[in-house]
Length: 340
Image 1 (cartoon, rainbow, N blue to C red):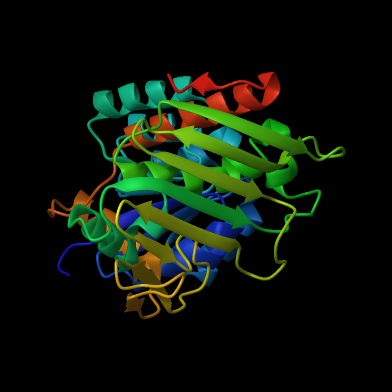
Image 2 (cartoon, one colour):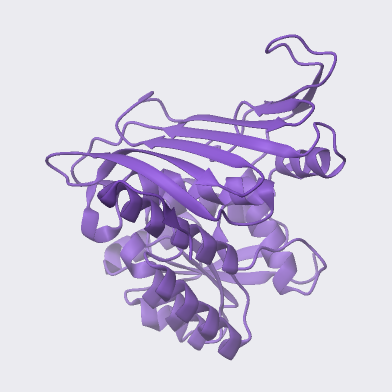
């Protein structure tokens, strides 16, 4: 392209090094210009590794760079709000890792900061950029399985390292913040709205103090959803265990790899209708390997450049955080909680 968005990255987190920065090199509309790390030697080494022209030892120095158009924030969860606001105030577009904030109040403040700055900000859910999700929403809109009656989502992975931020309650660790963000965002995407109320149970690690197993029932009024997320269950392989099933009034659909695809792999949507028997699908929609991180960077960059492409407002994150807060309250009190 004749024009590219010049990106800056705050921090050298593994998700940035392994997924998002390499994705920037695949996206025609993007280029990595600068990287900042509080470890100056790490900043220089990482910038050199990925051919970034500029390395900074302070995050605010990168934000002060007038040539940086957009900032990617892969910092620990408790830092997302602060540096998203500071990036917006510096006149940068922002792509921030999930969860966007740790409280719904912070998301509200972030919405106000976005409106003041007039810049674009999104929560980095790469899965929404995959073609399979476009197809799922098309199938539902086309009434392929009838009105949605229930949705079930499961994500699980072994996160056992004590140094992993996911095992630090003060940093927004735990299964619900990390994996539950995916599940809730996807359930709301299917229904097109947030739930009315939630009932949840949680089991906590006695050493880390984080919720390592959380399940919830979500009431959408004329439909239900359930989720189970676990940070000490399922496989220890490179991928999380993932499932999503949508039950319609006249059929069903099932996704075999719906969320975070750490590596591009083939995936499919199985659809059952009046012709299917048991769990045997009538139709299978297959998708070749796709780098959803590169798709995300390319789409976001094109949005910044003025192209008419899909975008997701951070009000989606507001619905997610309100549901997470209601789930935590429900688990503590053993009662249904309204999603405010």
